[in-house]
Image (tube, rainbow, N blue to C red; front, side):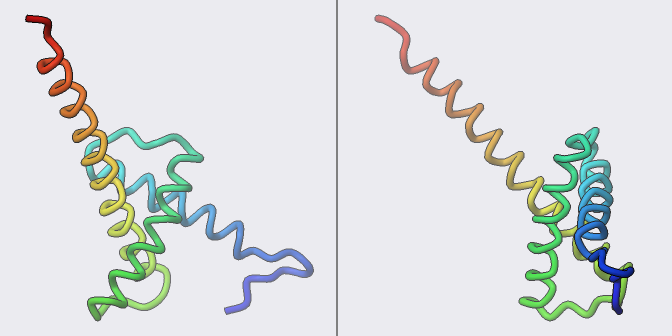
Amino acid sequence: MDWSLGSMDWSIVLTIFFGALSGYVASRLLGGEGFGFFGNIVVGVIGGFIGNWVVKLTGIPIVEGFFGNLIASVGGAIILIFFLELIKYLQRSNRQTKRTTRRKR
């Protein structure tokens, strides 16, 4: 499919739109409010790479085209958000552990 219209390359525009959409859908599925427009784009684009990589690695049969890419991107964004939340949780628990061990005796 050729997404060029004249001299403009629409693949960048579609990547940004698709990233924003998949990042927003993934954050809403996990009960969040989203990461803002630019945050959703970043989460969605990185999630798209992760999702497509996982689909290819595991050989999961998935629908071709727009909906297949959307499913893979949302799945990858969910994986990314899960690990981001896990890192935040570990940092929070690490800070609380340091507070309890630093008490003066």
